[in-house]
Amino acid sequence: MDDKWYEAEDLLEFKNWVVAGNVMEPYKYAFRIMNALVRNGYNVHGLHPLDIHEDVARSFSEIKDRIDVLNLCVNPERGIEIVKDAKAHGVDKVLAQPGARSREIEEYCKENGMSYVEGCTLVELGKL
Image (cartoon, rainbow, N blue to C red; front, side, top):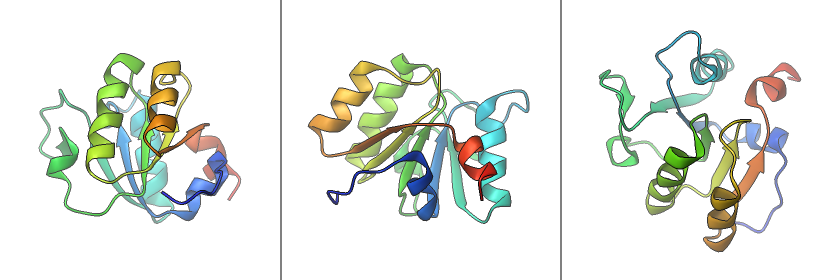
């Protein structure tokens, strides 16, 4: 990880994202975020450990592309395991949406050289 301090808007400079959450359910924020990123030209993968759709990864080991940013849209109990998986696969930037944030995730990121940012991807994309 570089030593740069990131704000949520800064993460939009990076084009390779994973959105962790229920990306196949139109009423969920993860679905809206993933589709907004795609519409804006980002390379995006959906991830959810319990998803059965073939277009959704269950772990980072199923994703062959380099990933710059993990966008968390899951409850923090599941989120911490996803963050640990991301770290093991070289991801060093985490954007935690409202409802996906926790002190445990924030502390893990800081202790493991990962940038942790709290923000809303849809708000930031709306500023473009």
